Amino acid sequence: MDIRRVAQNIRDVRSKISAAYPKRARRIERLAREEDRLRSLAANLLLYETLGASEILYGARGKPYVTGGPHFSLSHSGDYAMLAVDDEPVGVDIEKWIEDDYLALARVSFHERERAVFERAPSAKTFFDTWTLKESYVKMLGTGLSTELRSFCVKIDGDRACTDSDVKACFRLYRLEGYSVALCSPHSHWPEKLNVLE
Picture 1 (spheres, rainbow, N blue to C red):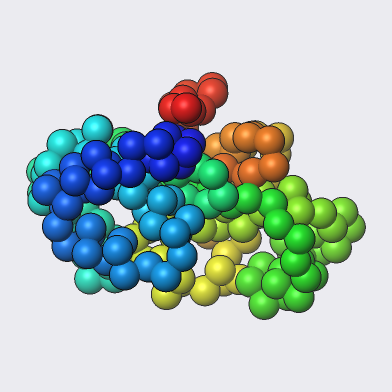
Picture 2 (tube, rainbow, N blue to C red):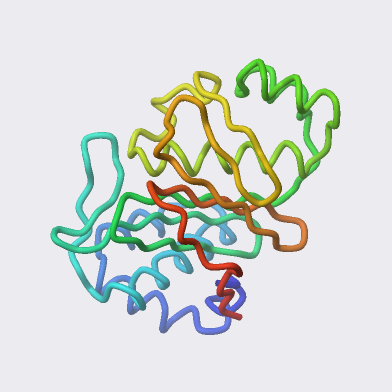
């Protein structure tokens, strides 16, 4: 979802999220930057439009879930918020390509084989494709960053990827101009294109 949709209807969205998810709404309002609040509101609006006002609970490591409901994962970056919903555990990550010291970040976050690939072709795309795949995996597991990102390796093959540490994890990369988007789940029946709500 494009967060500008939320900006155009901010009062209505805040009202819906406050009524449906009061704890999450309070957390959103405590965010310091307006763009962070918009991204979080957009992600929660996607959740509301998909699951309704179901009670959102949290696992031991903070992964949100709905009792008896489908598995879901949220992510947001730049102008977009993403929601993935599945009947099995799922992880989604989106990252806007920004200029940074990718080499330093890769050294502390990437597996040695990923660093070698990145160092041969350093770019925002290469870095964020790898980063979003890794993030989607730990989100699917429900461990978040308590799992060391450099403790496992993802290998990219076009719009697909795999990891040698978990043969059941299936990955898919998607493209939005200036962004990397990755999905991870135990199965590989992903849609060919993202459904982007304007």
